[in-house]
Length: 529
Image (cartoon, rainbow, N blue to C red; front, side, top):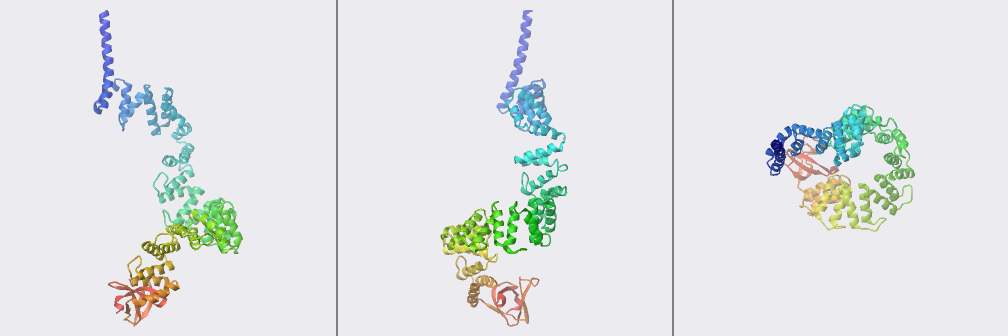
């Protein structure tokens, strides 16, 4: 009997040690890179009920299959704590919140610190998740809000999209996300879609934002009438921000007839609480637009807007001091307010600072500082600053002399219509400074400036015309066209024998300058000799 008992015990020991060795050999195979062999062993052991192998079929791959997930669940159900945590997290990712909570609680009760932390971190979310899983619209909306506040926009939008038919603010936030590129690529057309849905349901925020998109033509053609319609809807409840905007629409006739009385009424209602309303109301007094000029009142309202950080209002406060409007003239105070506005990015204030520093108005002259502010304004598109920056480079004031940079800034300003820059550009072409010499291009730019009655350009033009070739009209009446095409606008008609100055020649058309009105245009070559 004893011999048989010993034999039975030895057989059991061999079986158990063989199983353990097989699991361990699978681990060794996995570490050696023989993944197929390892998983084959774990598969066999899992079928025999080994929960460690069940778990390893899941944890040994970066892309677990549905079958692997099934083994993970069996391992978790067998009480393996790591499997309970991992299956809980898998269920959470799949938004199976009830199941996720159950398995994380099991893992936590089995002393899993990770599970306890996950439950603690999401203690406010789990009640909402559970209700959302049952299609509770309030909880879905609330989840959208919570993720939005944390700036986890992708997660937020997944929830908001589920409640757009129940809560109008869900579609508002969908619109806001697409308008600003929060968690999704910026797409104004989609923003309009969601704003429209929300606005039609009565959401004032959506109506206001929709108005701005129509006003600016973002995601649609510019449609001022639709902008006015939606801004009126937004302002209908007396809400401050859209009321201020509606006042602006009436003030400038945006999508409606200009009505300064209505503008004044609306702006006055909200000016104390809205910097844009205060700014536009101040502008009415400053310009005498619909009301009598009153520089004291304009100063007061600009001051209200300035207290809310409105840069343009700072600029106009400076204008009051610079020109002595409604108060004593003070270049020192003007400089202070221009500086405050310029530092907030106002381009007009930046130009004005450059001017004051260049000329020593209210502050010691400093070409270096003037250059800095002209450059900031020029880069923001101020044509006057672009010309003056060209001057600084041209003369080497506040920077090293650089005629190429001077030419670049003169040209940028000239092409936008600045008469002084056009004359300066003409001089560079005439003298071959910073660019190849060209009497034709010099005359072209002098003429452009002369058209705006710039006296120096008119004088320079007179001095260069004798350096240009001339041609003569050979037909009874020849038309000068705006472009080299008979379909373009006719600028003037010239009689036979009229001399014109040649600016450039082509195979069919000649660009000419005509003394009358300093006209620049095109004559067909068959009409000239």
